[in-house]
Image 1 (spheres, one colour):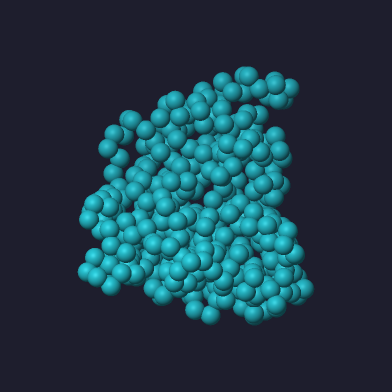
Image 2 (spheres, one colour):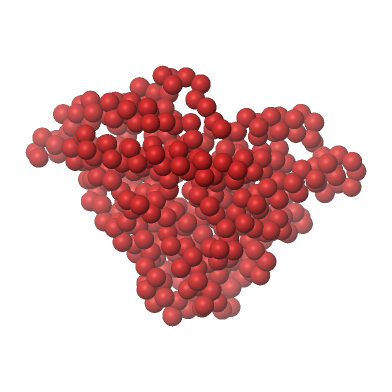
Length: 394
């Protein structure tokens, strides 16, 4: 279990962007960086040791998501795994259909490769979502009736926390014989994930979301899912991703996956209590604070809001000065100064969307953190609203 060393130092609530690396993973990685320089493809002793480490990590990661070790294709990032899915599966299915169906709230590592494929002649369809961020089964069925080569809908949205009805949506795709990919960045290691139960054809996950190191991720690709290689040049990772694997990072991912699986229920209960306290107290104690995402069917470690009449980046900067670290929208877009496509898709007005703030928790966060956050946000919001021309015209 993680422990906060100094309760008065900092409150870190941006775990969905990057979580603390487990000490057990760090120790294993340090040993391998120092001594584990063998290539898994080599037949000598060091190569075989590296191959054993790789195989063990594959088993650990597979166990976290209910997959077979053979299904695990290691990548460097979750974005790479999503790119591998879209650019690997869609071309393999093009003879059946060149239509790609995605939701309007996907991460840009799904939306951008989908748009790139559209430039190469694929037809891209974006499914709308409701005010909570849910994709409609009826909308999906209507698009599948027109044909599709691939559907990609994320397991949970990392900006508003809503968990999609993936089992239902995937079953619709299976009935139509269409591969279904899901971005599991926010769910693997946080809530129970089982690829067989979900019924997905491919699932992207990343180590840094459950205590593993940045630079280690995977695409879970069960047997029978057609795919073409993303990186060519060797036989590594079932021939789908050439190049020597990052053995230290992968080993760290495996250890973190095993620990996350063993602590899943405990961590979910702990973070849910803190999440619920945040969701209850902030709108109650600060006027014009709106909760985004579904109130119940959401990640246990996720609380997201829009604060009226102010700009989210200002909140983050003032909170950071007090040792409170949160986010505003996706980490991949928060510095672009663009409005959130996710908030736009769920119907949030542009001005209100500018006041987005997202807290994603880890097991080291406690209820005492909520007290500090609420106390800190009251004067921060008041100060920013005092400078806001929108608030003055209220």
